[in-house]
Length: 277
Length: 276
Image (cartoon, rainbow over all chains, first blue to last red; front, side, top):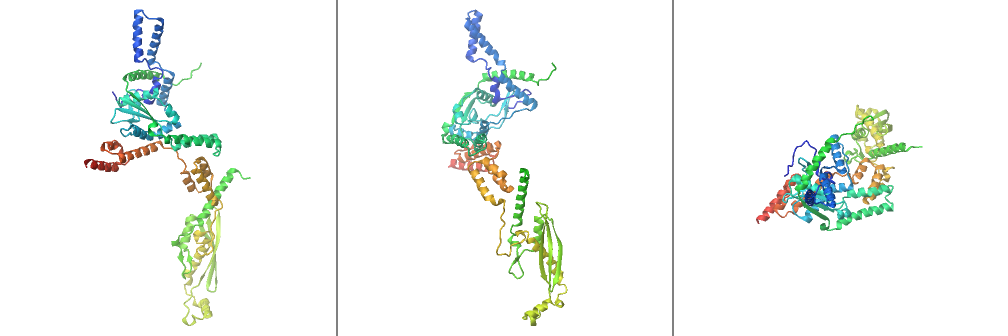
């Protein structure tokens, strides 16, 4: 199943972004597939109603859509092309991302405290196959699990955290790469490090003309501290959210088809050349 | 009118001058001070004076206008010590004066108790030792240099025999204490931007500034933070392991963090308790 270190000349896509490749074109579900077959039979027998005919057309469109490339996908493939071709990349580091990186180990510790099980060591090995590449957070040795640990930015984002498509596809990608059959997406709420708290306060500081005695600045700074203090008062079991799912070979087949389409699109990319009108 | 930039340069020069004057007024080391032959006072030997001149003025010093004259049994002299101020490049001239007694033969026993006869003996040129000035004359020059140098500051032995001495009170950095208090207060109340601004615009010595700036939150090194945190988790895991199986979960990482000895020790402990 897994082929960890494959050499390929074809463009590889990162697991964390394969959700963007699939975006808006996930093909038919199993039930929709059955319905399509059923409607085709009806059509062949001449026993299809107008409503069913419209439904059939919609399903066929959706089925064909697997190979279609939407705007999100185009944009992502273009960014991969720019990086591979020119080394062009736009680095972004939001406070949320910074917290994720700074608190990864704190979150691993919280996972071990609440879920138990083996020691979670950060995986640093990059896996790749003929299609995708990626570095999963944690690969458990004793269990058939890959874990992805997300550190929520604050109490609100933690309460809103759900299993989103992007993470689901990322999980499928990691399972495909590592050969593991189960995936655990874990959201953790851990205190924000002082460095980020200072950054948050700084923004208010500049907003109020670098006046630390400004009452609005003081109020904002106190609130920032308070928001972080709340996290410290919550028991560990209230600071963790777990979503589990299994490896889905069908999804991987769909992904392969999609990647082929994306590669074809990738090959068409070039810089626009000026032509005299 | 003084422009802000000129003011800055001027301020900077004043701080440099002040810091240099502080250096000139640093007390010499106790072990470099020696008792005078009569044992009643201390002196700072010429070797240390010259070496201090070399060190503080980077060898840029010289002597000029060595003048002397003999008065009865003494030779008195004066000399100009010229140093180049390393901050300004200007020369500073200090005159030193001293005298040495011309050595005569020992006073005969029969007049030792007669003060006038004894004095008459010592000023009679016929009693002068033939080579009395072989050592005496260079000594006069050395004493003149020492005398000139001590007016530069305490570092050259200015106050070593004085009962009433004054201390150098810096005009600019004299307000350092109040400034430090303000900075400390800003740091302690997490007003880091204010603290940084005060420190950077202050006239504190560079080393003091750096020390204070090092106490402000630094830029983040993500790899270092991650590595330190993982190291701590592994350490806690080793210490908290209650079975060999649990301990072995971190085996592949112990070398990365130099915990192999600790790991082995814990493994032995757990093996022993298991066997019991």
